[in-house]
Image (cartoon, rainbow, N blue to C red):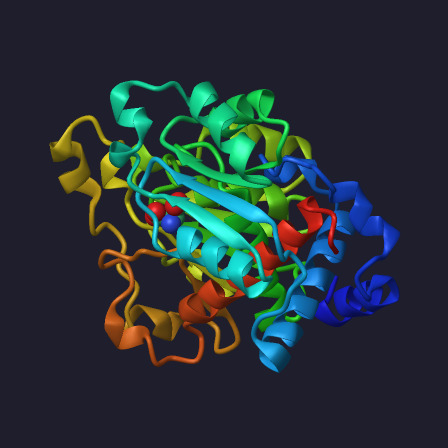
Amino acid sequence: MSLSNIQQSASQHLPFGDQRGARFYGTDILSVNQFSKEDLAYIFGVAVEMREMVARVGTFDLLKGKILANLFYEPSTRTSSSFTAAMERLGGSVIPIHEVKYSSVSKGETLPDTIRTLECYADVIVLRHPEKGASAIAAKYSKKPILNAGDGVGEHPTQALLDLLTILEELGNVENLTVTMVGDLKYGRTVHSLSQLLSLYNVKLHYVSPDILRMPPEIIEELNQKGISQTEHSTLEQALPETDVLYVTRVQKERFDNPEDYEKVAGAFIIDPEIMKAAKKKMIVMHPLPRVGEISMDFDDDSRAAYFRQMEYGLFVRMALLALVLGKA
Ligand code: ASP
């Protein structure tokens, strides 16, 4: 599916008020597995519309009077600030809880009780938590929509949506692409979500990682059953020349029990201008960020370096999601 197809299909359904958006009203966004291709076309159509509105007027009152609780038990720069910016650009407001140590969580309050509290004050809750499955637990206790902003080593569905929109915007298409994921595929929740989302399309996946950080077998098995071609590698050489999207990830230091194990694999793969000579001229390099040395800064001016542009798509996707779950798109 190309972006112009997506925009075409979206323009049939916009302006705001179209019935298809109703399908998302009040919905939790917990996993990429909840989306069909049609859902993605619709969400991206709204995201493209959001981008146009931001370019035209900056801020508008679609969610005026609505309140978002931004609840982060783990560090975040892009996800938390883009959700805040998204809500404020739509005219809504935000309760920011970024330092749970200053909230009642530090007094031992449970996640269900914190969620029960915030749903009294907010219309929607964005949650980042160190435990896999935490968002699903939160959703059980909340009548307000929960948006999973990363649940430990589980998933990061809103990141995967913005990643897919980046691919579509940058390369115009997702069908028949070769996507190479490199780095920490074991603990990296972004690659868990993205690989599953990409399995809706006809793509070829390469996984490049140190042995101890390989893609979880259950994800490989799930994608095998969907007929997706997947190959694991310990070096980049084989995969790089045919790669259309090189998705680089940080080794997730905070997930290691033993710091020595981290030291052994940190810096295993570094993308720099020299290595990238073996890659296609028309391809992109993505990274969910933050980077901690996996992509050399010398590469930043290369037109294939898409990771800073990728961040911006996050704003439009999150504006679209907020509007959709609150029944306003
Ligand atoms: N920001 C991304 C995440 O929260 C990637 C990372 O932290 O390495 O998963």
